[in-house]
Length: 305
Image 1 (spheres, rainbow, N blue to C red):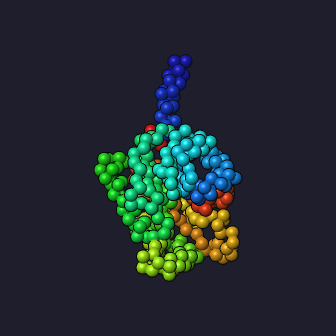
Image 2 (tube, helix red, strand yellow):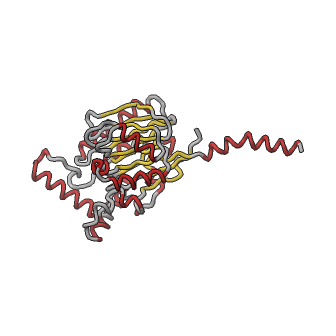
Image 3 (spheres, rainbow, N blue to C red):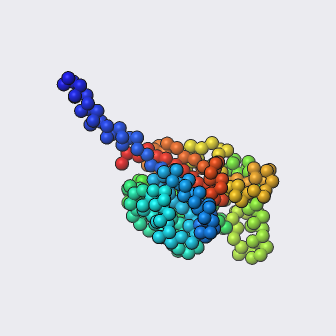
């Protein structure tokens, strides 16, 4: 009998450690497309709230919270179980973050950015939410340099090992060079857009391509910190597309739809999380087909705080 109770006592002592090892952290990055048409598309808004509630994520970083106020984001976040939220700004194309756990605002950066950068901290993890320029590769490269320098000076030099950068980078990864070759319609459409802007404004026109080709230097700057691209490590080549969704490709022919895919949305993590990532994907099938022009990026991590 004494041996039996001794075993029970040992199991009770071990149980919290077992529980801690089995805990997880789920993170989502999502560009929600013009804040549900500046708040007018209530059907799509309701559907996304329902989907996010089903996902039960711990942290969600948002881009394009157009026409949102801090109060609106806070109220909506409660619907998917997040009592904490922060909004970068209220004009233009705002960035935001919501969380199950208390958020500490660490910084709002706007100067020199197309849309800005939001820095928040929760659970001893620093989260940087970004939305880089959709129109000009040189502007994106400048933004990448500012974000990377910020990480080096504010986080790395202060020995903060736990951080993530998530958002719509509007840039292609060098890992996806083969993926880009397999989807030529994306390059064609970008060349067409650049050409039209050049005809209108000449040498001062924004150009999303560098000399007519995809520029990989933006993502290379982040990867060289190093930051880890978790989707690259956990997702098959043909499942990485994050833009566009059928909401904006319905009028294209099947051939053009098949060729018009790209990955511009990412969750990048510090080396601390590289081997703690248990799952990462772009959710580019099912319900998200109808929720935005971008697909969400989702990643889960083993987390024993």
